[in-house]
Structure formats: C-alpha cells, structure tokens
Image (tube, rainbow, N blue to C red; front, side, top):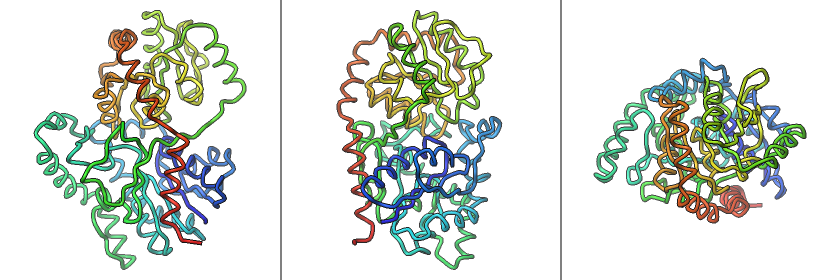
Amino acid sequence: MRITFASLGTLGDLHPLLALALRARERGHDVVIAASSRFAVNVAAHGVDFVPIRPTLAPEAEKVRRLNHPSRGPERLLREEVFPAVRETYADLLEATSGADLMAVGELLYVAPLVAAKRGIPWANIVLSPTSLLSAIDPCVLAPIPGFHAFRHLGSLPHRLLLEFGNRHTSRWAQPYFDFCKELGVPGGPNPVFSGKHSPHLTLVMFPECFAAPQRDWPASVVQTGFPFLEQKADPHTRASVESFLASGKPPLVFTLGSSMVQIAGDFYTLAAQAAEQLGQRAILLTGTDPAGKSFAGNALALKYAPLESVVPRCSVMIHHGGIGSCAMALRSGRPSLVIPFGYDQPDNAERLRRAGIGLTLQQNQISISSLTKRIGAILNDAGMRERAGKVARKISPDADLERSLDALVAIGPRN
C-alpha cells in the first residue's frame, strides 16, 4: 500500500507523521511525506520520499511573533497564511498523492477531503492535542479567550454555545476555501475549521486517555491510541557534550521552547540560566540558535539542539512552552513540567498537566528570574508531583501505541 502522510506546520506537527511513516515502511508499505520545503532535509535524513507543500510558513522571528499572538494568532494564521494559499495547497497535495492508496493528514490541511475525493482514496486526519476536538463536555482552554475556561463547572451548555458561535465566526475566515470548492464544482461541506476537518473514515487521536479521556461529542470516526515519538540521534559532538555534562553532576533542569517559539525567546535563556544558578541547579538550555558568543552561567550547557529523548529522561524538571510533543516527552519520561504557554493548544496542554498535579504554569508575560526560581523551586520540593509523574509514565507504551495507530490507519485502506 502506498500511503501519503502530509503535515503543514512546525517540526512538532511533522515528527508524529514521520514516526508513523517510518513504522509503515517497516511493515512493507510505500510511504511519502508532504510538508513545508524547509523540512526537506529532516525528511531526507530518514530516507523517505518528500514532496513540498505550500504555504511554507517561514520561521522568521517577526512572522512567528505575529502568528503566535496569544489571542489573534489563530485568526492571523488562517486568514493570512492558510486559506489564501488553498489553491496551492490543493495542487501540491494532489501531486503528493499521485499513486497513493491512502492519505493521512495533520492540522490545517483543510483541502484533504477535496484531494481524497479527486483521487478516490480514503483519508484520515490525525489529532495530536485535545484542543483540535473542541469538546463542550471536556472544554479546553481556548487561547483567544482563556478566561472562559473558568465556566467549566457550569456544564457543557455555555461551551456548546461558545463553540456554535465560533463555528459561525470562523466560517467567514474560510471563505476562500468555499470559493475554491465552487470552482471545483463540489459541495463546500461544513466549516473546515470545525467539523469539516475530520474524516468520515478515521480521526486518529494520538494522545492517551490519561491526558484527555474520550468524550461523547468527539467525532464518530475517532480511534484513540497514544503519543507518537520519533526516535532521533544527536550528532556525535552534541552527544558527547550531553553525556559529559550529565555525568558530571546531579540531574539538570532542561529548558526548551520547541522548534518555533525559540525564534521569539528574547532573553528567556539568560534568565533561565540565572534562575537555575540561584536555585543551585544545573541546566541544559536548548536554544534553537547557535549559543556561541552568548554568556550563560557556568552551571549551564547551552546547545542549539539535542533530541529531547537524550536529555529529558535524565533531568529533574522540564521547563517548556507546552507544545504537545514536549508535553508527551515529559510524560513519557516521568518528569514534572513548568509550562510557559504562548498560544494555540499550549494553554490547554499546560492546564491538563496542572490539573493532573504533574506541572505548574507560568504566563509568558510573567517571566523573570524571580518567577522562574519560585515555580521551579516549588516543583523541586514537591515529592508528590514527581511520584504522580512517574505513575503517568508507566501508563505510556510508545511502541504499542504506534502499532495500534498504524493498525487503525491501514484498516481504512484498500484490501489487497
């Protein structure tokens, strides 16, 4: 079977699909990855066929800052980047599915049902975080209006009304999509930002029930499995630096802002190193850019990049932005988190860790040496939090979950 996996977003969006693609290839399937052209090298490193798709969503700091505005970010992303490029995305995804028997897509690829219909193939959409499911029964912290989550105790009605309003409001953002459907002579269907993005064949939910339990108002086509992990290796120099540092003292704090938020980190890493020093802790700083020439305290190892699986299982606390990949690694490793959410799914992911008693949250506009020291210190002194994190880690089975995910995916494909 030939399977096209398509992702439009950051490395955090791409890596889960690449993990699935690699496992599918191990089973003998022919796979291709479609993603932003800037990730061609990442995909090539795994020997997988690659097709670029637009829009590119370039990572320049100013654009990242604009698209990650706490309240306006999602609207800007959809109205300024995703929907204006709907024709280009359709054309690119159509090319990527040439000869495909099955297609699996991540977020923002709203043209997937149009491409699947044109090709006459089944398709699945892959959900990586609970916010994508927009449940009124288990309401999420919505980044544009986080305060509304305080009404959670009132039941599902207020949230159902809010989601109905959001559905009507965002359908206007999708007007270029509906116009394109008319050009193709096909029905536009429901709002692609809401229910229209879910496949009738399979909505593959790739986070475990211990993170978010299934709900009655999820799509009927849901199969829930668990977090996907793309195993990576550090280059020899980075691996040697990490091993030497880890072996030279007690478990460090790990600070990371993922692959995108690092573009707008400001002085975060300098403050992080100073906070760690005040706490008498060592730190690994994953800065995303070359740290050469920057001044950090002697207790810190600053690296442009290192695979999270090489450092998080041996750290004491993980301090991160709340991207679902970072949350998954913290949970898998049994490490508590301090989450500094920026936008999108991150505030909700942070809240779920806090509610589970395995993390604390610090707002982006509250970052300081004092606030970092206070919250990290509270986590270090909370034995119960470490114990709860360890219990969650024992519920996560990455290999089995990846197998179940692929089983669900190939089950909707053509029978040989």
